[in-house]
Length: 618
Image: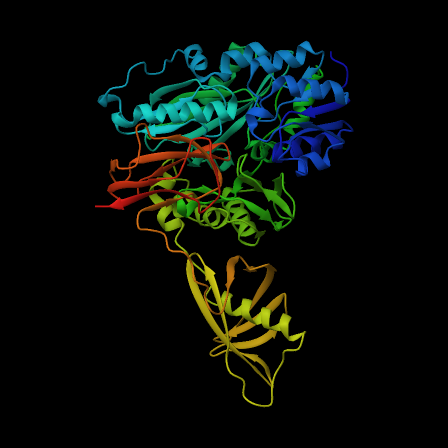
C-alpha cells in the first residue's frame, strides 16, 4: 500500500485541471498547476495552491514537454502527478519519467498505456488490424491518429485522390496535439452509434464496468453531447459491452480509470474502436448516474486502496453538453476574445476552466465548459439540460449554445434515434438564424435610458424619431423610438419599463422581459448577441472578388504543393492550411479561376480578416 498523497501536480490546463483541483481540495490535498505563458492568468493557474511556469505558448513547447513537467513537480514539492486528458495523458514515456522521479503516477501502468494508448497496438491486441493498402472498394475510410483522442488527427476519406493530403494533415495535427504523428486507416462505419464503457480497476484485481455512455453527437469526430446510460441498448447488448471492456482491461493488467469505446452499427453489431487509458471528458455523466467521484477513486487506487467488490448501483440518467467557443454555421470555426460573463442555473453542474473576464486564445481547444444535468429519467434530463442552456448567460465570442439547445430538442435525439451522422444531416437547419425580433428595440431603449441620465429625456415639442442600428448574424436591424411625456415609445409596442439593464415590452397584450448587457459595441439582449452600428456607416475597403481572408487567428502551416501566382485552380481546391486551437483548418478556392495573388507564407501568424490569396474567377 502506498503512502497517502499530500500534493498533486496536474499536468494539464483548463477545465480538467480545475476539476481535479476541486476534488483535491475536498480531500485536503495540496495542488500544483503548470501553465504556459499564454495561460499565465488562466483560471487553473490562479486556483491552484502553487503554479509553475512552462516557458512558451504552444502545446509542443509547454504541456507536451514531459521533462519540464516532472522538473516542475519536483521543484514544487508535489508527490504525485495527475495527467488529466489529452496532452501527455496516454504517453507511457511520461508515466515512466514520473515514476523514475520517485513520484506517484495517478494513472495506469506504463505497460498498459503502451498496449492500449496506441490504437494500432490496441487493435492488434483485440485481434484486429488497420488497412495496409486502400482501394476504391474500401471507401469510405477513416484516417485516425494512433495516439490521443478528442477528434484530433481524424479525417473521413470518400475519394482516393484525397487520401494523401488527409494523411498528411492528420499526421501534422496529431503531432501538434499529442507529440506523436503516427496515423492509420480503418473502414468507416456509416450511421453508427458511438457507445463506450467506463472502466475502473484497482491494484488488487477488481475491475468495475460503470455502465455505458452514448457519445454519438459529434462534430469533426469530437464529441458534443454525451449521456449515460446509452439509450436503446438491450440488456444483452449492454452486458456484452461490459464483458468485452472488462476483458480488455484484464488483458493488460489495467489500473485506474479508462474507457473502452465501440461503434455500434445499424445492425446492432459492436465494433471495437479503442481503449482510452485516461479519464474521459464525459466522465461527469457516469459520476452523476453512479454517485461517485472518479477523480477521488483514481487517487484512492493510486494510494493502493482496494475498490469495493461491486460498483454502486446506477440511478437515473445524465446528459452532458460541451459548450465551445466556435461558430457551427461557418465550418465550426473556433472563436477568440474575452469571455465577459458565463453563468448557468443551479439546477445543472458546470465544469469550466474560465471565469468572467478571461481571454480565449488561439493555442488550445475552444471548449469553454461542460454543462451536466441528472434526473430520474432521460426525458427529464433532456428537458433540464436544454432549459438550463437556453437560460444560461454566455457573453463573449460566438458559441455553439443555440446548436446545443436545438440538438437536445430535435426529435431524433429526444427519441434516441441519433447516430454519428446527426450533424451531417441536420447542421444547416440547426444553425439557421432565429433572432428575437424585439431584441434590437430593447437594446435601443436600454441605451436611450443610459444616455438620458446624462441630459436626455422628453421634450414639450414632439421629438423626431431616434434611430439605432444593430447587426446580428450578418443582418442589419434598424429601430426607431421617441421620447415623449409618457416616456419612451415605439410603434406597435408598449414600453412598460426601460432602464440600462432591463426592458419590459408589451406586444399584442403579452409582456416580455429583456435583460440587457453591454461591453463596448457588443450588446446582449437575453440570448441574442448584437453589435451596435454607427448611425451613418463608415466607408470600408472593398475586397476583390475571389479574395480569401483568414477566418480565424492562426498560423499558416502549409501551402498546397506547387501553388504559385498564375496557377489555375478549381472551386473547392485546398490552397493552404491554418492551425489554431490544436486543429488544422483547410482554406479552399472560393471559385474556379486563376490565382492572382498569394500573400500567405508558411509559418506566418495571421489575424482574422487578413488577406491570404486572391483567385480571379474565370
